[in-house]
Structure formats: C-alpha cells, structure tokens
Image (cartoon, rainbow, N blue to C red; front, side, top):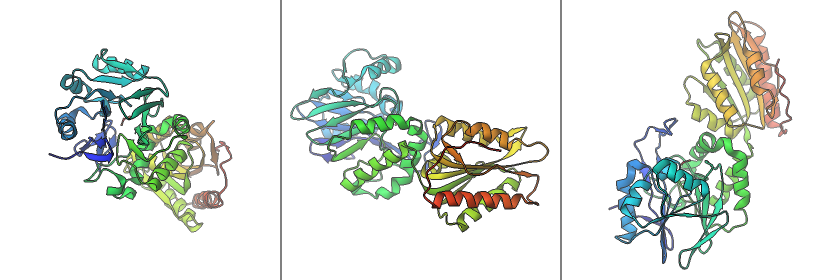
Length: 409
Ligand code: FEO
C-alpha cells in the first residue's frame, strides 16, 4: 500500500495523481497530469481537508486508511466545491456516516445542490475558529479564488495554510509531494498556466485573499494541486508570483500570436519578431494559433508585458482562432500590456476595425498603428512590420510603464 506523506507533525498528505485525464475541466491539456490534493489532520478530532475527483475514490480510500486505519473521521473541511475536489464526498459520507462537513454558507448551498447533502453540516464564518484538540482551524473566506464558496483553512499551532486552488499547479507529484522532495522549477510554467487558465479572471479576488492572509505566519502552503510548499524561499516565491500575476504585472518579454492560412500573415509575424529581437527583446514567445494550444498562449500572455496579435481577414471578420483568443483574453480581464496588431486581407480589410473594437476601453497601450498587408508581403508593409517590432522593443527594454491608449488605426 502506498504511504501517506507527512507534511508536519499530525498533518498528512492523502491526495492522488491523475495520469489518465487528457483535459482538465475537459478544456485544458494535461501533458504532465495533475494531482488532487487532500490532507488529514490527526488530533482529538480527526479532520480531512478536501477530497479528490470521483474517479480516484479507491486510491483515496487506501491513502486515508494508511494514516487512520479504521479510525473514524470527525470533520471534512471543504475549502472548494469544484468536483475535482468534492467528487468523493458522496462516497465519504457513506463510508463515514457520522462525519460533519464544514463549510461556509455558499459551500453548504452547493453541498445540497451537487449532492443533496443537508445534514451533518457545520457552517463557519470568515475568521471563525474550530478547536479540534491541541490544534485549531481558522477559516478565511476567499470568494472567487476560484468559485464563490472558496475558502482557506489555517492551523495556527502548526502555521500550515490549506489554500484550495491558490498556489496550485498542473503536473503530477512523481514520488515526492513536498517541495524539498522534488524540483520546484519543474512546476513553474505549469503554475502560471494553471493560474492564467483557471484563476486568471479573478485577479482582484486573489489580491483580496492575499491581503487577508498576509498577517499570518506560514511554514507550509498546502494547495489542492501540485507540490506542498514548505521551504521558506519557495513559499515567498509562490506568494510573490501570485501577487504579480493577480496584478497583471509581467516580465520584459513579448508574445506574438497569429493566425495564417497560407503563411503570408505568418511572414509579418516573423519580421516583427526578428526586429524585436534585434532591438534587445530576448524572451519572445511565437504562437501560431492553429497549432499552439490556447492554454499555452494564455500562459505566455500572463508572463510577458508585450502582446502583438495578427490575423488574416476571414469572411469579413478576424480568423476564427484569433477571435477565440481575443474572447479568452476579454474573459480574463487582461490589463497592463503594450499592444500591437497586424493583419492581411485579399479584397476587404477587417484588421484595424476588429482589433480596434477589442482594445477599446482596455488598460492597454497601443504602441503603433495596425500593420495591414494586402495579399502578399511585396511592398512597404515589411518596413511597417519592422517598425512595430522596433517600437515594441523600445517600450519593453526601457522599463516604461503602460500608459493606456487604445487608438488603433
Ligand atoms: Fe481545482 Fe477550482 O478546482
């Protein structure tokens, strides 16, 4: 039987790895899988914090037994009701009929809504506490990180914070669970991809949550996905990363995302990238939207402060996959970016009109007019593309702040 990993005295990891699912939320690729993390706190009362996806109940049950044997569980704390974490609740209440489920008002509504559970529930308030023996549980309501009922649970005596999706990453836990048992750098990009795709819309909620827990001492962060953070330097790094991402702050780098049917718009993208690199931008992420998965593009958009998007005109509109990308960016309330756009058409141009509508009212700085090409790259349009690359590079390498200006012509 696999053993549960000890996080600290009395606290054990009892989560599972999912190496089978292809898409998280049936949307986001899982090339390196994902873990669903759950934890046991052993005290006079025994507490389980969160559960796992319903597909992994057998493995979850074995992990719990490896810590508790046949002992009952007194409380289940539900920090988040999304079914990747609440999926085993129906099994749990059958296996442990006397278990009390602890959550806030919204959690309790969802327990009934998803699973028809109304009994044996204990409602807690923001900053409320529950004694479980020599340890206490303190609850911080953190709505919209990532659903309205999300909360964090803190054990003051151990300085351990259970954070739900916050500070979580894609990627399974391969052998090790704690950051000191594995290479944290391996998870960095997957943490950003998780943030950009799953939590990215809720930057202001993340900021409020960070403020709420800013005064507490933390010796371990236990999220619902990915490694448990225990090394002080790593804790500081992941908190700083969440702070930056949720403020839409980003590194000096450039994303060029473009659609191209026959390669003509793609040639503009290459020229822009070449010129940006020649002018000092070292980190350039090029994405052909028909090939790169949108989740990788969104990850890079959250990483870098420069964003240039290109599209051919397609049925008097933008290219469908570029439209989809713009919609995803709208949905995530992206802010604070230097922005440029380019496009091509055969007989009737839609580039400037559609990109103009996209940036309207957004806190972006449009660094240059749209570069628009009729048919092939035969004329002065190449110089306009190079100029866009140069201006973007100047903005990025000078350390300038974004000054909102959304005029595209
Ligand atoms: Fe990992 Fe919002 O669920």
